[in-house]
Length: 90
Image (cartoon, rainbow, N blue to C red; front, side, top):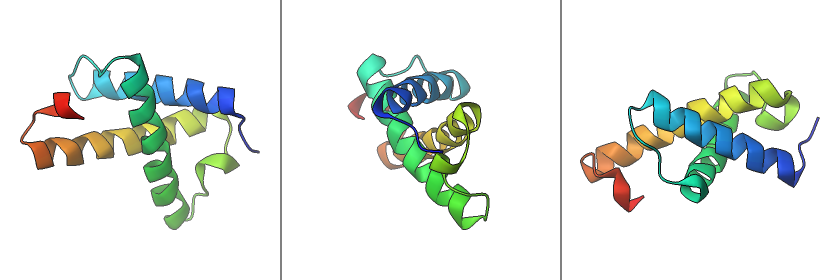
């Protein structure tokens, strides 16, 4: 089951917002939260696919949000490691 562009925007916004809450941050603003969520969806989908769970496109909306959020958390961790915790430059 594939998602349309509107669904991806919603997934990105929700995943970015959840990542801001999980990572004890205030978020990056709506646009950057969406970007972090969408990139997180790609990272999460890549990891999910290689673990044999299928990619993001093969799941429903809720599972896609979960996978995207996991990927966004991983992305945020990597950015914080590379920038020394200064996530404002993301």
